[in-house]
Length: 107
Image (cartoon, rainbow, N blue to C red; front, side, top):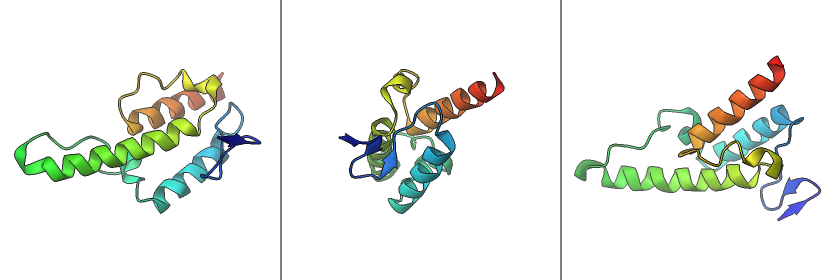
């Protein structure tokens, strides 16, 4: 699934300790192109309330979150993957990676 540090089919470099800025820029472009960016950064970062009025919205949000989670997890190196294992949403994965990157810059 990987070729020279790239995720086959996505054209995105695997996230490693030293390429966060490039990875983030490429990932953001890919997710915007796939209409998935709002799940990470927009108004759709949390699932809609689970009730009869929101059945379709919740199903769509869940599907988009699952797609984006797959892309994120496939584009993270094994060395960094442990940092996102317990995340419950793509927004949480991105926040965890951002915080990890911010912490490594401060040290």
